[in-house]
Length: 536
Image (tube, rainbow, N blue to C red; front, side, top):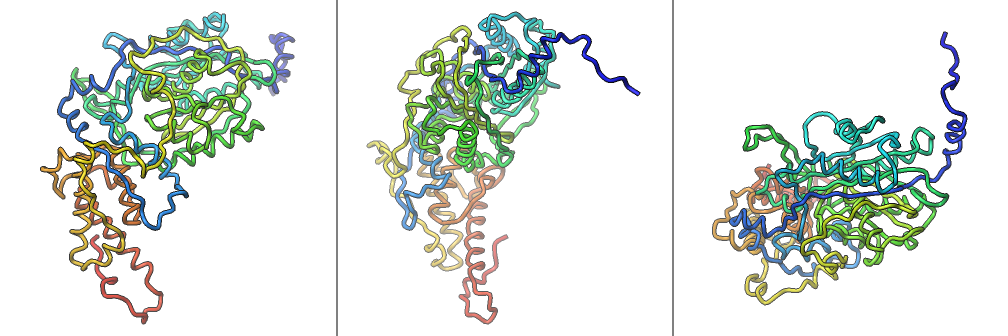
């Protein structure tokens, strides 16, 4: 039989501290960010891939008209997203201005270690003061198991080191975990490192590469004075967005295996769930903290796209001037955005001691999280290199006024002819044998007017993935659903699906809707056109 445990080796003061910590306020003591030396612009991408750049430049904005029967005031969640996307459709680079990228000689681990060392130094601590380290690295330097032990070794830490990952929500999930551990008295001083090296895993010729940046952030978590630090956190599942990004191994120029990321077939789920996720997380976190959103001094959203901050701002109906937006400066740096937003807010004077701040992150295929904090005396690491050309105006959040009031330039008017109008009623009123051709013509017309440079070579047998990027695909999907009142899954725009396949799918859905509307009485009169064979 085991003898009862007696804490002979535990100092009495430590036991008293452990009991006292249960309800102790916990928060960030210091934070730091570190970025690679290369500042990359879309123009540099255009110089490297002139043919793809020319195709991007060929895209024009299509003015959208109000649809009869649609309540323009009662926006759906997807309509909220679409409304903020619309101003970027005329920009061939989709709102991307700058991003930080690893130079050939730079090491991801060195960037991570520097961020951690800066956070430790800013807190006035030494490596031996760290009792636990948690790291989350998206696309680390080496393949295999977690990166935390290697980082701890390089930093000279002798404490436990864990790897914790929840895609773009990793920083907030780590903070929630650490807060609980400190309150439980398990640890007093915890180091968190988050990093994202997206430029390593995207094909440089893929337009997804415009948005994928590199960087690292780190923060120290300790006990805080009462009423400061983390007040509440709400975390929810985002498994509805599993498959938004696809991963595979390829062979690089050196003949070595390399992870490659691309847009997945469920990319549309990010748009479809974005508004509901930010509302649920932020409102729940505020309720747990016992405050309203009106009391928040600053909102910091992760921004995987140029319009994401605007989507969140509109979804929560909050003043845009209270919202951070670092996308023009760093593009998508995954979980690092949470740390970078707090750093730059404090460094620039937008966040002061005792201010309430709400940080929201959305990790595709993992979790969404919102944390409410009362800002304390947080020490900051060294200021990173300033952007080369980003202006304060570009980092200002501005909401799109309306999808129906987009500015159309003279060149737009010369390029865009009247759009072919097609409705569900028009398709159903057409002769049965002409319906497929009618839908196909409608689809071809939309693409030709969106991508005039491709118009001469466009054919019904062309895979949609070869002509539409994910944003154009989502815009096309939204237009089809408004015009024809039929729901189209995002996967219909990817893979080997052609324009002809999409036309058949749409027509099948329209015909199924007619069959569902038929009376249940088998003797009831039905229209002959309603009993046609589906094109399966």
